[in-house]
Length: 351
Ligand code: ATP
Ligand code: MG
Ligand code: FE
Image (cartoon, rainbow, N blue to C red; front, side):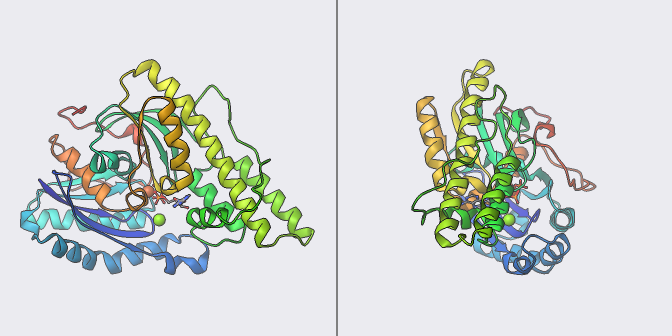
């Protein structure tokens, strides 16, 4: 089987061709960063128009790279939500049109299901596994029991961790996008600030919180600025301190989730991390220690499959297609779509 995947839920326009032998035949990502940078964040209207301007050519380029025509496809997959709705509509409508013209199944997938199943494309991991999903809009721990079967153990009660990285970068004057900028700045730290809060540490549940950490960071930055002491050195030390606090918190919550998940699911196969923040090397290192201590493999897809891409969307669609699932052409794009409310394919999952 071979499918075309389309991603357009945020500020990356992406098209990919993936087959059921887990080969990525093409994986093109067009970042809109330069278009949004002057605004210091993603502007939904700008994003939607940019997807519209570029998506058709990107799809043609992906098909050319894969060396196949539309008639060779077994399905056309698009992100059906959650995300910025204008962009999701552009991608979903494009996929529907291609599917209708070429009489192929259309599959609308949950963007988070794309992140959640990426490790099955890259590492062929078997169900059930524990997933730490850390992205720009989400921060959750889930047991992935099968395609469409996601059991949430905990989630953030305020900001997503990627959002926290982005806000920290803004506070520190590191620009946009924040995650990679904070990681880069942290490398230059001489004395990381160690006394920032570790939100939710030691709690019996598996929830997260990052707004207190952000506030603490803001207070430190404000105080240093007022004293005329906010220089490149302070910036690096605060970036490192923030990153360490965020990772400590993620690590503590993940350790708790391993304990909780094992109570109901003793046969966990792996700890998987996914979403844009999973590209962070310090986080990956910390999670590998947690996994080793729990006698689990850590699976972390390569960085460019952690941040938004269409290969993960194509793959999630393929997983559904081979279980007999597809979507009606009147599927309505969903701005909100919790992963644990994503239905399993009719033929049942766990494959
Ligand atoms: P969602 O998947 O929740 O809808 P999204 O698609 O916008 O949100 P992703 O593209 O998966 O999010 O991830 C983007 C986020 O990842 C941004 O917040 C970005 O700052 C963060 N990020 C990317 N690289 C790194 C890094 N190296 N370290 C920390 N954070 C990072
Ligand atoms: Mg993005
Ligand atoms: Fe994403």
